[in-house]
Length: 282
Image 1 (cartoon, rainbow, N blue to C red):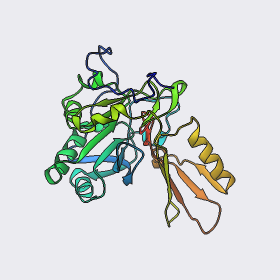
Image 2: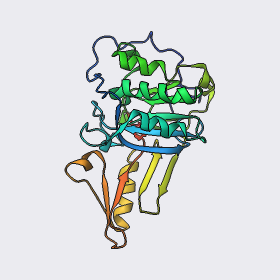
Image 3: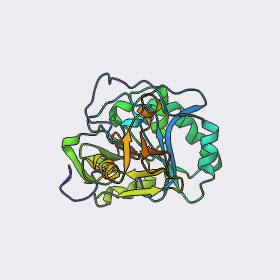
């Protein structure tokens, strides 16, 4: 089932006394002043954290977890450069959501920019909550760069640890049972008592043919299954050499569909995705 025998979410209030000593490879903060490099955003999601949330999948991850469900978010090349002020304005005006979930990719590779983003949003919405996925352990991030510690200080929830395919499970907001939900503030203290079962997947197809999904797959191989089904339905699923290494592509064989971008969700850090992901998001 999970690391817990209780059937409840194995959350932790403060994991700072647990192992993981020494240098952690790949923890550099590559933030650009005033900018974020984003793979994808979603303005409304109910599967990647408590209640309704916006989601930002950042571009780039120094980790290469086997079975990552969002490989298009891994390269640091690609993605879309967006101003922190622009993204903050977008989040501020999403009145139906109570917070944002940060996935990728690896959010802590753009930690200072994300910390600045949360500060800008909270100038207008002080109660705006924040959750993040990371492939690093909480203990390691506590010894990270100033930007990484700043981002930690601004989060309410953290899902930490790399995705481990051999430990995949149908778990709440997580892809594998080694990952933890770390409760960083009192706001979401109640999640420690939630049943540890997956929140599901949200799928949407836009009028322009865009197909997307967000959430943490309950079973391994979900993405391969989806792509196989799309192939059987007449789509060619593949990736181009450059930008599509960061964002996959589906081209319809039907002449009515000229191009469909395959933007997936949770990375299984991601990804959820977030792809997420994500993911696991992440």
